[in-house]
Length: 393
Image (cartoon, rainbow, N blue to C red; front, side, top):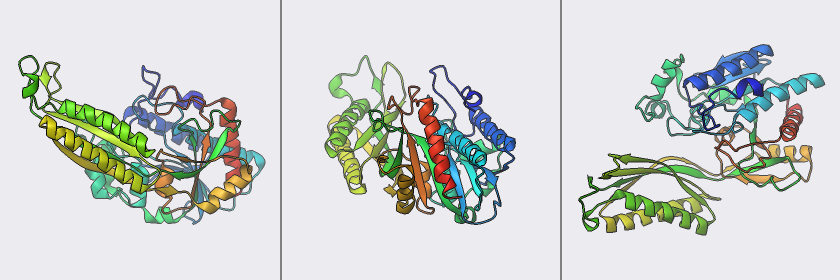
């Protein structure tokens, strides 16, 4: 499966550009459908574009579901998302080789647009299914070229007419287990290839618009400038310092400049803040401090600062009974770890008993080509996932 999937959407950087509803994403979706067909699984796409491969009665209740996503961030790694989907198919194969008797419906899912690389909102497919993203909200999403999400779906051959909450499907899911590459180094220096997830930190995205005045870079005196780039740069530094003091995370990872000329003082700098913290109070306080620092610096620079919250995800604690059951099954010494990364499992957790498994990442790097996992650790992940699923199905 790896050999078939690895070339799809690979960029010159060695990373991947599998953005939602683009050609590379469509190739990955075709791969998923082929995997389902090769196993005789019933394939379907829901109204929000999520792909499903079913064993058993898909209309029955209390289904056991596993999977992840196949899309990527710009120049992302090979494992974030795809490892969970491949491991789901491999665990299904393992269960059949064991002769496991399935007493509940079983499905493998590929949630669409988990990374939010194209339309700026993460976990679009699972948010739509659970209703945390409305159909109206989905119709308003646009990519950098101005293409709306429905238009992108239509261009890829999917009818967007059914976008929106899917409570009937959600009600049929009895448990969801997602396997994922570890995004960090908590396991890298241990003897443990796997960990069980405890919680996902609250996190969100905020757009900072720094409005200044365009002018000539070669003729405008420094003291006469209203340069939004200065305010932006100081805000980036302030965010790093305040996050460190708060024991949290803050990252400006995307920026747009107007008019974007080498010899021009910008009129507008727009930066996107990603911030995460152990609890919602710390997160709210951190973002408020960053906004305050931006405003204070903007006042000195003659720059107007406006902040818009684009998304927010509260603290997620995975189902305690399912988490503890997994930990007991996999060994009492298995690490139980929180994470700052968002996942479809986190979105589903408000509606469905949900749990996650992490596979060790020796580099600790994620969302970049250096993301990796050893073959033996991946195999251990498949076995562990099969063990967990066998106790559920």
